[in-house]
Amino acid sequence: MVGVKEARYWEPIGDGRVRCLLCPHRCILRPGQRGICRVRENVDGKLVTLNYGLVSSVAVDPIEKKPLFHFLPGTDILSLSTVGCNMRCPWCQNWEISQAGPEELSPYLRVLSPEDVLRLARRYNSRGVAWTYNEPTIWYEFALDTSRLLNENGIYSAFITNGFIEEEPLRELGRYLRAMNIDVKGFDERRYVRYTLGRLESVRRTAEVAKKELGIHVELTYLIVPGFNDDLGEIRRFARWVAGELGPGTPVHFSRFFPHYRYTHHGPTDPELLLKAKEVSREEGLRFVYLGNLWDPRHESTYCPRCGAELIRRVGYSVQIENLDLERGVCRVCGERIEGVWRLD
Image 1 (cartoon, rainbow, N blue to C red):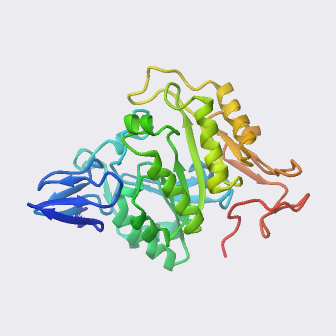
Image 2 (cartoon, rainbow, N blue to C red; image 1 turned 90 degrees about the vertical axis):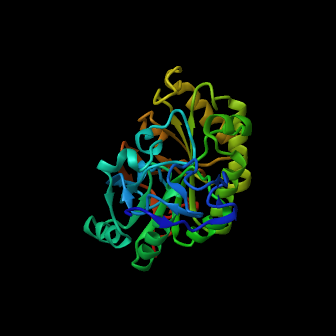
Image 3 (cartoon, helix red, strand yellow; image 1 turned 180 degrees about the vertical axis):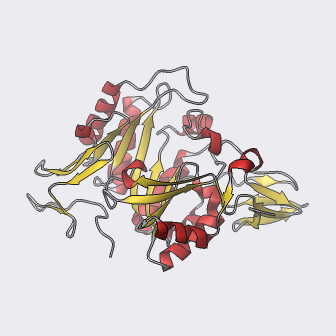
């Protein structure tokens, strides 16, 4: 059957039941049951993935759209998505694909092989492939096979993810990832579980392992949602964790919320709150804090944290390298090292 393949991380637990070991939900499934993600099913006592190679979207995007601001700025990346997600965020902007199973969107899905993705990347002269739009963790087997093939052919992979993945599969896939943007939904464990079904502790661990142990370039996105994660004390705790555990040079993107999907009882985030979030994050030591969905170049451009020189000017998705030495990754004015991946070897 199209899209069906035995899952990589699972175990039988008796009576025909299986336990999925891909993400921290660790769903226990009887025959015929599917996991929270909607794309992993117990078929006759074996866990299978139902979306191998099933593609809902193919696009070529600016790398800044992911957003990745300190990774090959001004380049394009081939973007792919499938269906399903292992979280249930009520404000999801891509809910049409993330909150659906393969059958619901089958007329709109195309089937690609890893070799097809490699050919597409070459056709569009893309140096990399982004697994994005919906949660790529639940596309694990296809992402792993394809990322391995891409890596062998000099093309990188980037994961745009909620970070809700178990450590063992993260470490296996991480060998083939060059960049990740991890969407941290907030910094309160209780509300994290209540609103998203995810767990903050697991997401924090993913970010720390990815950056400190696997050497993956990591940027973080924090969508400021009114009534959920907009307390400045919570934002300060988030910034303190980033600075202390991931390092003050880690790029952070605070993004403005707009009413969407099932979360329409609040208006858009007050721009003043985003400015305050940036201020408290700088107070906690973060060196590169960006504000998304404001469309203000002052808060999307990159400045040297030492001398203040403009390093990269961003106006929308128009990018101009100013005072950043891409070869050495330093400010041309004062020589300060700027954290990021500015060129590929």
